[in-house]
Structures are given as C-alpha cells and as structure tokens.
Figure (cartoon, rainbow, N blue to C red):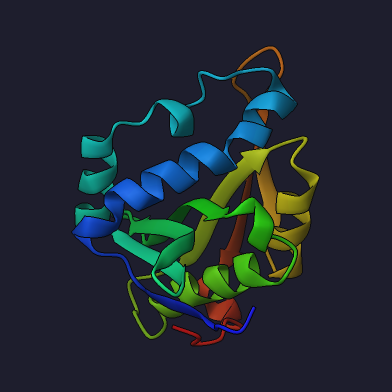
Length: 167
C-alpha cells in the first residue's frame, strides 16, 4: 500500500468517520444474525461522540482515512470493557484488529485499579472469537439476547500483561 497504519487516540472530530466505519463493519454481523436493528447500526452520532468523550477510544489511520477503531471504559469494579473493535473490510486479516486490541489494553498498563479486560461478541462470529482467544481471552458467560443471537463474554486478567505498546 505504500503507507503505514498509525494508531492514535480518537478525537471528537473523528466521531463521524468512526460512525460511518462502524455502520459498514457491522453489516456482516447484521446479516449473520438476521438483525439490522443491532445497536451499532442504530447508534446516533451524538451517542458515539459521548462514548468517545467519556471513555478511551483509538483509531487506526491509513493516511487521513480512519480504517479501524476500538473503544473502552473502566467500570467501578476495575473491569476494562472493550467495545466495537472494527476494521474496514479491505483491511481485515492483516493483523490490524490484534494491533488495536493490544493498543487499547496497553492504555491501561500500570493502572493498579484495572483488574481485568472484558469484551463480547456473537456466538457465530468465529473470526472475532478466534482473535480474542489468540490474545488470551477466555469465555466466561453466554447470554441469549434474541432468537438468533447469543452473546459470548470473554475476559482476561490484567495481570496477563502480554499486550504490546503499539500506540
């Protein structure tokens, strides 16, 4: 491609780009589960901007284009809840999702209040499950949220610490 992908903190002005990318990326999930009403496809720009301002968000850029993103927030129990790890379809299967996951974990390295990392995905989302398992996440629960969708929650201890500071 001739350019390197750069991972950095998301800024408020990135919200519209992230929302468009999120809409594109979640089409395959909506098809997989037969539900185009899933939250990532119905989230408003204002809600996404609020998420960015209230938590931690990263973007990966190829030149000026946002090609991937991830968000996280820490709850009162010390769990970093990672959400909406998205990679543009043309950039998938090149390790960018793993780099972004490592980078968001690295944001919390050394924070003694952080006890664990947690994320979830649909039970049929095999590539997501494979990525998360490869990064040390283990399934801890399953919740059926609709006739076609069961969410699988995965966790790993913050002590695992095999994330790399790539951002």
